[in-house]
Length: 425
Image (cartoon, rainbow, N blue to C red; front, side, top):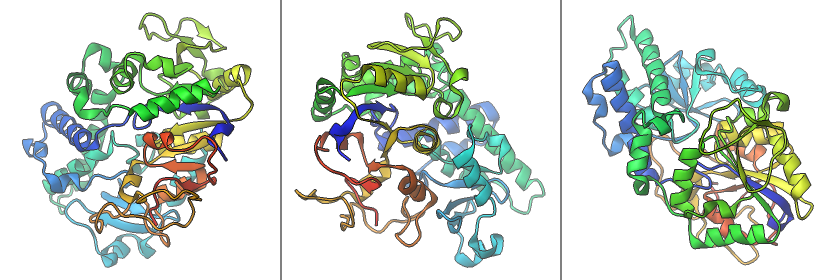
């Protein structure tokens, strides 16, 4: 597989085309969530006090078990690697006492729904919550702080935890609802607008040159993001410059993934975007046009546009970071290849790439010391995490950063399923 073999590359935006500064972003998400819970829901102000120990508990790929009120990390076969009860990590014996054979009882039904459902199950439909992204994982220490204010012997302990989870979910809507950007509502968007430079990294000249080179050589480049046009404009302008649209052939906003991939194409038309008015219901279209911006839609219409306008025959790849919205649905519901972006890979960067590097079975250079707390996002070679298992099953290539795309030579061979610039095992 070679980069030059692709007739088109489609990109997610958040944490893919646009790199966030996690050292600033994760604490900010914690802060705006805690502020909502204190000011809108009446929780104690102690939730707003955080330290480095709290931030170390943040990690993607974990699961909240709403029945036992533990946050757990599980393997790709459903065994529990570690569990936290809000106060401490549990010993293997305590995990076994709660979960016989250290197996998570909902794994089979969860995995089946995750892999097969046309729409990702809602929070209220399931006894668990998946911390899929850096937009939601910062609430993990907040959950623990709330649990520490309760007594486990309180007969209402479980109900109080469930109420907190629902309030936590309400905070996501309050802060992250895309409609809030234009109205400057919530706490998240006003902060992002005011201090964009704190949370967003500028794309390197090398990456911008690579995108321009790809487009000049006939590769179609498409943006497909769940973000609305206004937030997309803010981030892409900061990261790539005011001429950022010149790097791409088509821009698709408010894609409402995973439905962009999983729903029926007849139920997901595109809408023309005009004069920054994102009102849906006018100018429903069935065919895309080059150098324009569209809302919602379905991957099949993008694929049709690519086939009609591609300057060369070849494969199509989608580049994204979210397991729920990008990685799993792209492979299960579309005909596209998948380039996965996994920021946790930066902890396992290879010291240098060899001239004839085949990206298989190479020793990693560990950028960090022995991992504490939850341990590796990827697990071990013998005991891979559920998220690592999904990467191996679905990703054609996994990179730690979109900037890696600039170092992947156009005619360089890479094996399907490889970790390109890092090795966690």
